[in-house]
Amino acid sequence: MRLLFIFSLLLLYSCGQSNRELVINFENSHGITAQSKVICNGKTIGCVTDLGQVIKPNITVNIHILLDIEGLPNDSKFIIRERDLLSNAIYVTKGKSSRYFSKSDRITGKIETLNYIQRRQF
Image: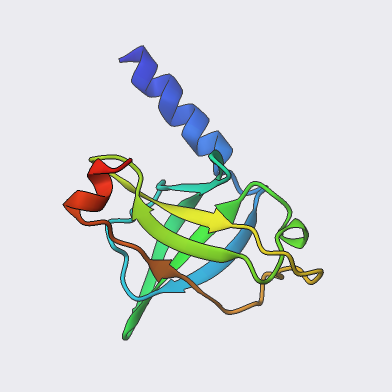
């Protein structure tokens, strides 16, 4: 029980208000929930804080990024895919642009699904 409490505090701290926020539009939430991880190069860099209003046909997913937004090139890609058997995450592939995301940018993410044969190859 203590471990669960400590884990919850760490998760809330890592997604605190001091982090930068980006809004990313996805086709649907595809299993993403508040507190789902945002991962870049194998490291957790943030988490989903809210699944905003459903804007047909897209759902807006608000994520806090632990990096400064200025440090994330504006050609970076955001993909929802399976993290493990029980959860999905948003994976960030950093771009190479010399321009960076700002809080007001409209960003569209993608959803990637793996079929059973693809999963077995990992």
